[in-house]
Length: 274
Length: 296
Image (cartoon, rainbow over all chains, first blue to last red):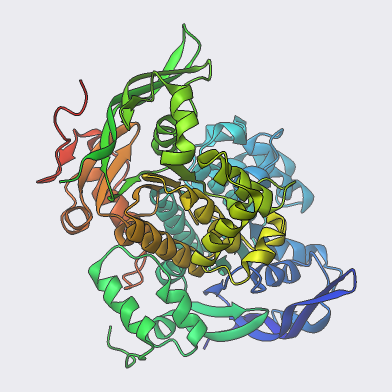
């Protein structure tokens, strides 16, 4: 039986400026299970980044509540919560301090959270870099001298340093070339399995979702449109919006084109025919 | 077969000072025939965008740029006549960039920018005629209220609307060739799909040739008649879209195709490490040779 790690209960967020009210998130209830890679998909303005910001505690919700491991998440996060929920952003260059070496960036969370004893932290940093496929001597280098894929590996190592339970991945491979993206996805998959991590994976790329996610929730204009295991959403998308999103993916094989045409036509395929 | 509108032969490009140079293009040859849709596909740093910029006459005059070989468009050599090709491009070659919002001037309304574009093709055009043409052009790219769009600034329109405005402007002077550098990459998937469809329909209708620059093989498959795959400044494979997707022969093309996650399932893409095979010589599929004698 799957255990919930994060539960959103009627979560809402409204922004107000100059007399305009924008409902960014409109009463969303959703459960994230431990050990899953749960993808949040939708277009600009769907509310996917707002969810990430609320889960990370970067802004307060307007309404509703969140529970983490069954306990209510306070608006003012405790240090333990901040450690347990980590973030990997889309653009690793702006996410890493350019004046700090790779090693210093990965070490910072160890110092902040008092993980391990001080003299062992250098070795721990080397171990983390190795875990994401970088040699130990990368610790001395500047993020500016690294490729996009290497920088994203550093950002992942920094998130891992806190030994988190949940990682919010906000478009982690959108800025990368396909070959590099494929390797980073493989790394993320391996880390999730080895460490029993849970991912909240924000993306607009449904092909990436198909490859790495176990569960997917589709958002449109702040509302949850559809949620379910990734196989069933692709085999039998219920909402017109999900069909539209899948129908817009540029594909490279005949097999994919056939699947997409069926989805575009809106005729749901029977479950379990894959 | 139609005559090439653009012919690039043995294009080499190096950046740097006179003494220390780094070569980034190592002899690119490609051609685009009238009304044809051709794609140049590769990863970041492969040289696809600088090739397009050289062909537009946008790079040659920079002091740190050293280009050789030939780029022929309408009988003009763009390597030698950088200024001339830049002057002509308003009429005969147009370009669409990746981010439409930054490609438009933020301080002027669309109306003024559209007039300027039309005036570069027809210096004598009156404001009233220019506005009429602009409205018709915006209606053609399915902008719901063209008058209102003309009175807007770029930041007041969505990314998708701005990209439509860019397409309308690019095609306004009926260019023979449209160069599109990753159009729509900055947009949502559904908007990207609509933009590409629109661009395909309009260029098809008018017989405009297109050189599409992209890293996305999925986009290319739906758009192009012919494809060049570029890797580290060299073309590695060239064929029709059908040939390239049905029987990719170069190790790099195969790796690129394998690396793309598929909606048909099968989990994560399995992929070979970056290998020296990627540098294997050019493979040209049957019937796709470069036209002979186009360049003296």
